[in-house]
Length: 484
Ligand code: ADE
Image (tube, rainbow, N blue to C red; front, side, top):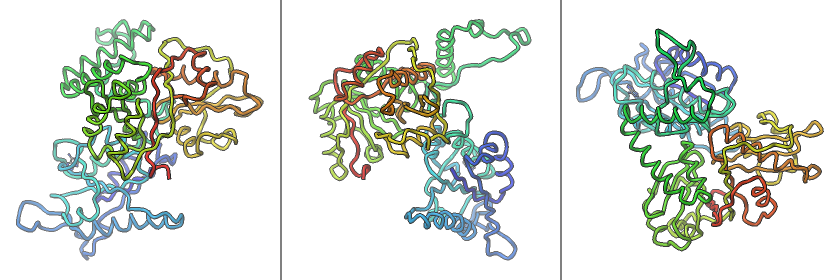
């Protein structure tokens, strides 16, 4: 991820972000940071970049010319780089930080973390001439309802929050893909040594080593604190819990929707009379269900209630009935969907880890992309590279090499299973899958995966491992334009 900051105080931005975790990320080339001094671009011979406001009013305004020229230079560098690769590109997203902008949230940070490059403009004085903003800005963003003296601090806040979502910036094993477990809840209280400080003891339960009880206590505390301090978040949490409860009526079928919500990656778009739509914004996938296979009216009401902008953004859809395919196609005739797979859901509802027979399995590193089985048939190299970055791909080793892989997709469903031909029928595939299931259990998830409805051997393997298969089928839909 490349960050470029247009500012009158480059040293402020650079010194702040060259510290601590963002500083390390810059050192390790996970992110790059350039701060460009707008003053270097002024045509005024005294180096002036501001002037009085037309129509009167207190204070000075940043002028259009130096801002535009600084932006032009930064974007020209980006566009020139791309030219060599024959890629036609638009200018990178340009963010102007201002109290008049859209509120910056974790969700917004996730959206921006998907970009390759971001340009930030820091205002000063009373703001910036509107004409240049109209010309270059794609996003107006505020970090909160208060007014600061300049845009540098908001930009630093944003870069910090976005950077930690870039794979490899945080060095813990699980990536940020697995975090923010209860999205609508605030963090529970935490304690470190000593056990007693100024007569105050650490809650006894936290010393018990009983992880189940500790998790329950933390959730309880999170709920309590959220209710007390952020009733707005708590109301959203309650609404979501209610939808999860409705979905749990057929857990085997709906586990992907329940987990999208529980893992903090999904948002309820619609829930009425058994018709439920959840949007997994992290992988732009719509998850739909209706009470019965032929519930045309329910499907129609649900699709029409979803905002046009969200439907247009969706790349994939997973639905419980083919009826939804018709609804989507009809409503979005110019970009129809096609069925890419008909699946059954496999869901592991137990809490105990599975035995892993093949012992030599571990998390794969990004550098190992070139060592993956050459004949890997199902996924593109780009998909595997993405899964490696997300720390979601595991390898089975034998004879000093990787002979099989498995992991989970961006939506969290376990899959990507492949074992090299000479190593099949030795339990390596089921060991890989058991390994992934155990990892997800450790993360507090309910493991699941979608299995092609006609893949008898893999379906059989699920049942042998103790997973339940859904009776009803799931239809995976892709947008045609996206496939080409
Ligand atoms: N510039 C000044 N105050 C700001 C705020 N609250 N958010 C973003 N940019 C700002």
